Length: 549
Image (tube, rainbow, N blue to C red; front, side, top):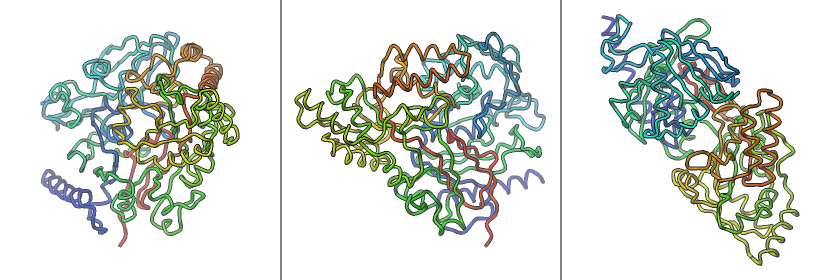
């Protein structure tokens, strides 16, 4: 009888998912709509394999499916996950993790009867050897994971026994636990991964609060509740509360917002130019016609939005320090944020390290100085004999308005800017391979330590093998970057971070535009959706109440 009830419930729920997610045209709520959390991913999802969770869209999805040793809470504190506790010894170079004994992989027929659960025959317990396999896979050059770099500081790792996993570092690294919270470091089951090979990307099996159900790429993606999930809330109630997560893939943000306004999706993240004036006042407040149905959550975001120069370019305007500085002082960041972001975000007058992270210094960056910008451009013309200097800025359509604003401002200085708009995937490949001279980019913190931002300018991290897309190289910077690894005194390490950022700004390989803020809009019946400075989407504690007619 119990199986029959469960079958009927599942059938009904699947019908709800199909109705509510895949044909979002009706405002009428289905009976179980409050058990399904719906959101849109306009950038699409490249892979559900955590070893390839590089972009935010992929990270949001894999965060529902996978767990690692540790996790980060909304205050950016590292907390236990599959590891219930750990010790740090050997001058902060050896980390020993003790695993929980109640974490099981999502059900799959390949597990067979290898389980300690008497009423299940298709799952098994996670052991330390699973982490050993997962970390070896991350390191495997044949896999070519973009996250392999997270283990660069690791000397060795091993399963001491089923419940003990140990990691030894080459040298002390204060941010290491934060690094382990990244989805790259999730545990995966060897037998499933090896069975599917490359197709594990679309047949994911993890330990997370939700399990994979169905994916029609660029159309729809469904996760279902993991009834064996190990985490509970403060009242010892099992998580998650929702029965399903349903993701659509409308390609443009305006359509996404329209679906949200009509009540067809539950959540919108970020502020797009297509709807910012519709929902927010000029000072960043929710407009009165939305206050009855919508909640706005706003907070700091460890994300620096910037323009970058490819320092190995042979183009004279790129090679000129004067022109790079002229661009930095040639536009008004405050005006840009007011007109284009309705006051959401912080003008980047400091360095590359965003406000909110230790190491940030508001005095080391650039402010709007139009007369200085004109002078620097004039000096460039006189020195080079180039009467009409030009530069091409490559961007994506989502940031065209920012680039056009900067274009108009810089033309007043005598520098002509052409804008080349290309798809996100094309820009991603081009900047990784040094094929664009001047481009828009952003860097979202992988872990809350300024070292993560400064790694973009360490010479051994040249793209495509690392995140140094500018190919900036400076021996003094490299020396300080390496010294920061060895510095165990917190204040001295932060001082090194600030010095590096100051040196970076003096060389001006980048033009910081603004430090972002997380802005989330949810329907009033959604609760438990927090906010954090890394903009991680955490759905295990989300609840939806039934809408009243």
